[in-house]
Image 1 (cartoon, rainbow, N blue to C red):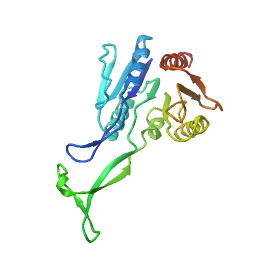
Image 2: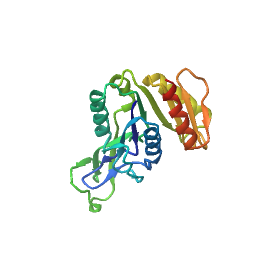
Image 3: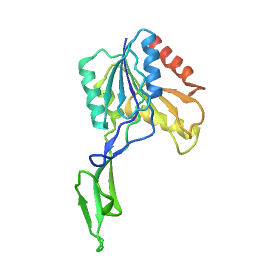
Image 4: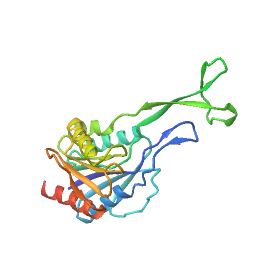
Length: 220
């Protein structure tokens, strides 16, 4: 069966040399793609160019993405290229915000938009305007109408109970089949919440997570 896995961070440019990104390494998604390929699935791995985990796996069709818009475009094209895609594992850490404009505040409090190719420290203190990026997970169901879609929820604020509640919202709002929960709010390990379930199945480590996900698509 054909599976698509996204891994690693997107980035958003501030100027021609600086970027907004996050701490995602890409190891979790890459490891999952490797496991699925070893099970005999045809796997396409979309991995962020900023990922620090860059293992080359010959059995994988690995393609690189950059910004949120670039990842969205690649996923949309793959949906048309492979309409028989069985599962999409959206493990990439997509930037929530992009840098729209950079401003310098003048002495009269007037804000001047800067358009430098490279912002200079000579400008002094600067103000960065952040705008929300597009929600890729919200569009996956319209692109992959018949696929099993797995989202990720990395939670920092709250606790395990609120993390599971937020995962339920993600499933309902985005019409996905399951959500994998992790982050400091959830605690050690992972939670695997399936559509229609009230509680998440706790998994202690990545091996248990990979086993559970591989089993899910095998039985689907």
